[in-house]
Image (cartoon, rainbow, N blue to C red):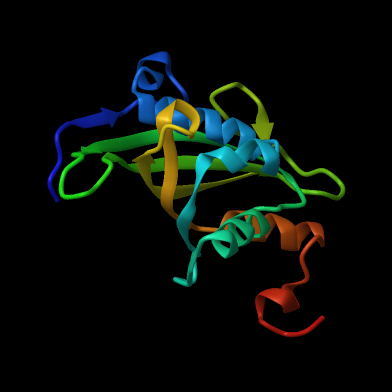
Length: 186
């Protein structure tokens, strides 16, 4: 893969030094809009031909990709994610490409589920306590687009995460029947 520069983030949280890179700043600002589930505020971040790859490998493009992304993450609970590490590869603008960045980001994701409370034993970088924590990785392909925030838009996004910690809390709390996990109708 041809590239021009590589930027490595190895600090937990949204550290000012990490935010000095335009791609990490872009991801942070998108992340803030996404966490408050503001689909209107998130819309300028996506290219019209974006691709979203679901956890099951299904690949969607265009308007169906955006609808699926918003639907998949329309969660009924409070959640937050912290950047753990990231690798940003600057892609050259040659061979007809507009250039941009390929970002691999490792995150810690936190959640509080609906229902009667549980023990909040996981703490994020802001000091807020959460009931469940899991790890995840996102691969985001950002392309240069003057109409996007900071001149960038998502061309493709794919996420990988282990939902087991969150599902365990949901089952214990009674928010999610175990039959649903077994694939049985409830």
